[in-house]
Image (cartoon, rainbow, N blue to C red):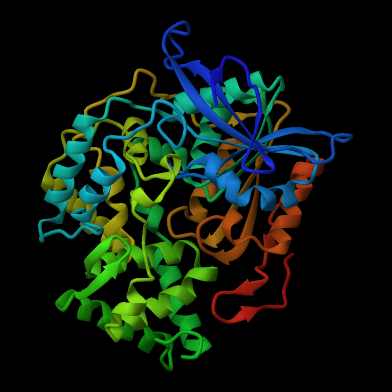
Length: 482
């Protein structure tokens, strides 16, 4: 699809439409080189009551908005109603947008990834290895997308659509985009939903430690629910949560002491280490409503050294098996390190102290999340436009709905509360559930509230708490919310 200065839609992927929009690579030189933003929309089906577009960002900051719309667009449309176009876009560096933050070809990346330490420990050399690898990426990447630029791209998209204001649904990192947009362009906010909130101030300042403050509480819920469900549902279940936790600890120590060879893993022969087990565990904690069952099965396969079963538990497929626009690239590092302050002065000992601090907060997530900051120590590119102004605003005619699960592994409820206070007129809706983002774990109560927000501009009552319809492993519950 050819890029142009205006949006020209073409049919794609069955019921969707695609386009590419040219925007200035540097908004300070509007007549200079261009970026090409990949767009994809699910058109409204009821044009008589057409309400415009809702831009959707699925987070990351490296997840393709176009691919996510392909997968989730019909479900989002069910919630917001048939009168909206639901539009996904790939931020700079991501997916099908040009330039792309891609250092390596698919095969090169898959080879490079084989030696990547999936978790970090203080004294086993993984911190030093990760730093050297991140330095290699930084020295070979020439693009430095920033959240400020992407927020301005969102305004360009709205203007190219011929619409007055941004209607927006952003989750995870997409909540940072929402905070930046509302601070930069408060009079351009229409209806904005930010879900699974990361406090933009902490993000911009590089203060990542408290992001994982609730992660271990979710693991505690896994032990509790697994124990209640029994071995027919959760095969590592024991008679109490404490005993289930002890069994899981023994399994992981077993794998640490005796890694498991798997001949025909997803990308060929491999050895399942404790690090790979942690990486898989982390993914399941993000989405516990399906993930807890998979986690129980995977832990049992580790315990029994069942190589045939283990080959089905994959943290990430190889790039060679994926379309180019959804392959793993360096966008997460590029965007994160461009947003964060300059941390090039930090030493290996500084990283060890950060890891120790984060481990005291969350022993389950610190070994992976610490790298969000350490990957930036040798990052060489500093942005021309890094927003350092207030991340707060009063939106004159717009409305802001903030949503959060009670327990989110990387976007704590405390962040949602802090952001709600900073944006005048914002309203917080809490879902008393587990996992990353309400969008990915949505109850009927939350769906109704979000639907009312987009369809009629109605904010939920202050203090509204939605109850989940089901619990992981143990099934449906009766309470629907209040």
